[in-house]
Length: 480
Ligand code: FAD
Ligand code: SF4
Ligand code: SF4
Image (cartoon, rainbow, N blue to C red; front, side):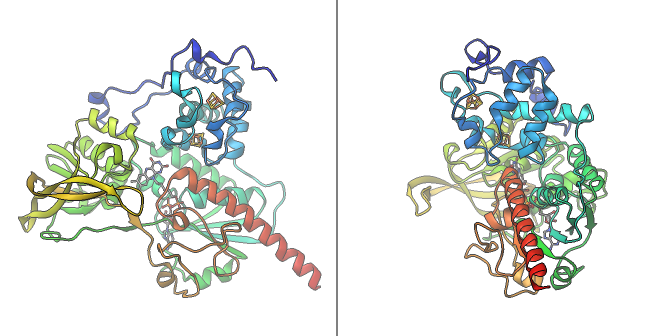
């Protein structure tokens, strides 16, 4: 099949992302930093795609999105069809278009990238679904026929929600349980508004309710309701509870006031943005205004903290990371955004002690140098003797990553087996745990990962749950 004339424009047209607001303007508020694509801009950028026979972009998209197809339809102005194709493989394309690390996934593998800069796949994906919402094309996933079997899902993050929507589409009675008071998991309370505006998450919640999915919020499984009771209520259960045990840092001064875990800090900021009252923010504990802030860590969570602190009006914001820029786990695009917004990166430096009397007023750190790769393949870090230095800090934020909580303990279910990393052990093909009829998906299986992977797992687990329930029906009929 020949490539339509309208495509292959990368030789003529330069890559152009939607306009990014200037740093001085965007740090005055918590709004997203990219403006919307104009329809002509999206069509032009989509037309840069060369419609590869083997599209590496799609191969490296965890959802296997049909990227060339929706790019071509966008270039031709056939946006409703583009939306149908894009939403066939992704429950939340407008969210992935905003927050996937595209440089490591689809765009990082676009074959025109080498000489010409990748097609702006994420921005076009976001544009398609935002347009679909604006024009009323996005409809609740109402089933053609109802089924009596019910599924209980623990966790209203992207993994649980994607599974809920897929199962509801097939007609199952779905209830999602979450310990928080809003739907979205880390989409609502973890990821800051300047990356993902909250109305985008809230409108998905509304649609899922309109589809007939029930939500029991403020309901912590293992406390509000027992895991055994939940299993008894449903024909199948999906655990999509994410990972929340923050890795800690010890050493002298670790107990001083003003040293806070990253998620406490980000949750407070997101709740304030949603209009909630947060006593620890009002008291100043989780507010960076006027403070010298030091964030410890180098991942995306650390980037979200430093950029939040800038927006709250911190006096200074530093990011302390023990490796160098090249070895940073966070997205380079986020590092660049943070630098533009005034964040200072202190590379190759690790904290040794927190300073202060009752309340933190500084962090003592030591310079590091990179050694040979360790067993994980990453360069090992070693302290440089006598290289200590101190940074002023009225607020120190620990962003060192997350581990899973003790689920067998929390659920009172010792037969739920875990891996040696503390994640839930599942059959890789069926997503079933060691408990019959109980499945698991998302971060609680993979460890801290990405939204797009949680969606993928949620979709796959939903398909497996459907097959499991179908088998139960067949067995019941055979037994009659
Ligand atoms: P979660 O989103 O964590 O949702 C799990 C839900 O389960 C939560 O709502 C929780 O309240 C609920 N729950 C837990 N235990 C119970 C219980 N016992 N009873 C009831 N409910 C329970 N990924 C990206 O792709 N791009 C990004 O830019 C990005 N930024 C991030 C920024 C931060 C600060 C963090 C922490 C993560 C970020 N991630 C990002 C990762 C991404 O958010 C996660 O990989 C994703 O949300 C995992 O989805 P999930 O559904 O498995 O779990
Ligand atoms: Fe790229 Fe993420 Fe969209 Fe896949 S879901 S095409 S990786 S932005
Ligand atoms: Fe188009 Fe790039 Fe994907 Fe090829 S790899 S189909 S050029 S977006």
